[in-house]
Image 1: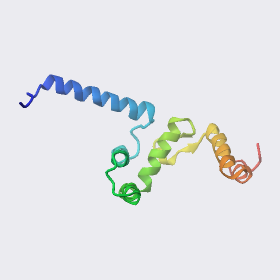
Image 2: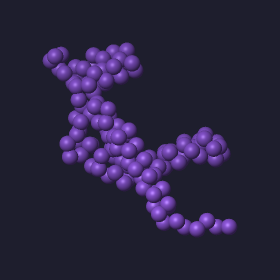
Image 3: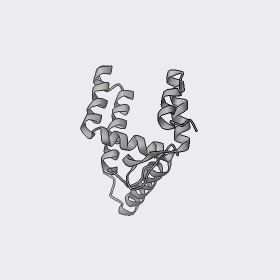
Length: 137
């Protein structure tokens, strides 16, 4: 027997799910409304659905899984990918922005992070720090 549509219950469920999404999207991930938020949402959805399919063994092999991710990135483009990355950096006080996150700037904490990141990857911070602070202040 088909369950009857209960507008009040279904509307409440929709509103609860939307509130949960908004809390995660804005508070945990750090997205704001600048740039192209709809395309960023679509990219994240595509990547997460691909990951779910991989977890459920829905791809014939790993190369099909990788192609699915690559296809998503190519579909939405590097600017949308970078917008997401910059929002996450901004939310964690490593990046700051005014009107558009893509035109942001690295914070002092971000500079410390980059120094540590470069040291972690290469064992040296000299080249980057000379670029960021040529006077070594």
